Image 1: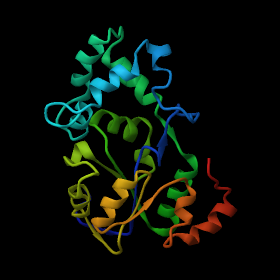
Image 2: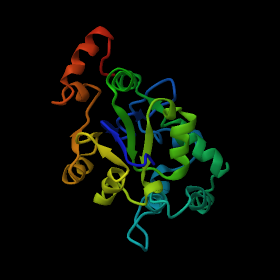
Image 3: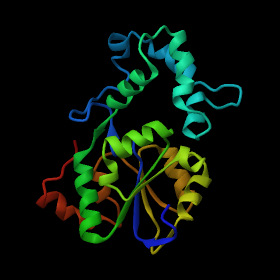
Image 4: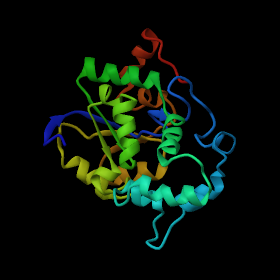
Amino acid sequence: MEGGRVCRAIFFDVDGVVVHPGSRVSRSHQPWFSALQSDLALDFAALSGRLFSPGLEAMSPMELCSLGRSDIADVLGPILKDLRYRGTVGDFLQYWFEHDAYVDGALLRIVEILRARYGYRCYLATNQEHRRASFLWDVLGLKERFDGMYYSARLGYSKKSPEFYQVVEADFAFVETPIYFDDHEPFVQIALEAGWDACLYGSVDSLREHPRLRWLDRHYATEGICSP
């Protein structure tokens, strides 16, 4: 936690904004699970029905993990066993994470400009369970690129809850309304209702099109930044 730090801040969602399907070196236009059947002999529809469908608490097992109430490894163990997966839970998680691991270099260059030249603090705001959050931060090295990561399992609230934004905001003394980019319209609306300057993210061009960041346009030209 930042402990009431005074700053100008920009927050970014992770999946669909900073990180995309694909390996660390090559982006894919297919979801991470597109080759699950051929690579691991797993039926994603069957896996999805067990992992992402609501249970007795009206929340899916994945949502409970994303709120920090369950461990994804414990949840996946019996599911993968029932689906006759021959590897370990660790093997499966590594496959998942490494196939959803392409970091947008163009966005990282803009973040670097915002931090180094203009004094912005740049943070991640995302729905994640603990294990992938650790992978994103430590293994993919986002800790070297951003000032911090606020994620649902750590906070105990998801981004579909106003409390998520309130808990994050309590960590700061903003000198101006925080800017937030998310590719999911419902989360944008909730953040707007929480008082954030939230915008729907379509591509890296969304930053220079933001009314408060239009001065970034000159950097797109001089530094060769373009949409993927």
